[in-house]
Length: 229
Image (tube, rainbow, N blue to C red):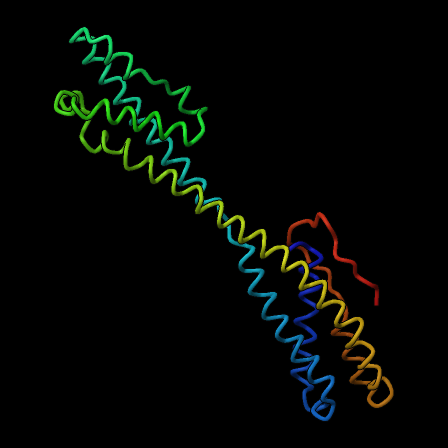
C-alpha cells in the first residue's frame, strides 16, 4: 500500500470496529446494516489484495542471478578444459567450437546464453572421459544442458508474479477509492440521523471516521483524493 491507502484503510478498519462495538444501535436500520456489511467485506478484500500485491520477487532474482553465475563458471571450466584437449591433440576445430568468453556470456540475453551453452554441452559430451582428469565432472557438463533449461523456466515464473502483483496493486487502489467514496457519499449522510437521535454515538462515529496519518507504506505516484471531513 502507498501512504494514502494505508491511512484510508486504517480508517476503514476503525469504522468496522466502531460498528461492531455498537451493532445493537443499528439493528433496526437495515440500510445502514447493509452498508456496514459491505464495508466489512471490502476490508477483507483490501487485506487480501494488499497481501497479493506485497509479494516480492527480490529473492527469486537473487537466486536466479546466483544460478546464472554458477552456470557461467561451469561453462568457462568446460571451455578451458576443451581448449587444453584441443591444444594437446592439435585440434583446431575443437579449439574454435570450445571458444566461449565470460564477457560475452555476461552480456548476452538469456536465449542467447542457452544456445551457446547447449552447443558447448554437445561439444563436450564426447570428451567427458578426457575432461574428468582436469576436474571437470559429468555433473558440470550436464549442467550446461539441464541448468540452462531451469534458467529459462525461472523467467516466466518471475514475470508472472510481477504481473499478478501489478494487477493486485491496481485493484487495491480502485477498491480503496470506491470504499472511501462509499463512506463519504452513503454512510456519512445516513449517520446524520444519529446526530439528532444520539449525539454521543454520532460523536464516536466522527472520531472513528477521522483519518490518522501513520508512517510507512510506499509513496503514491497517483494519490487517492481525500475529502477533508
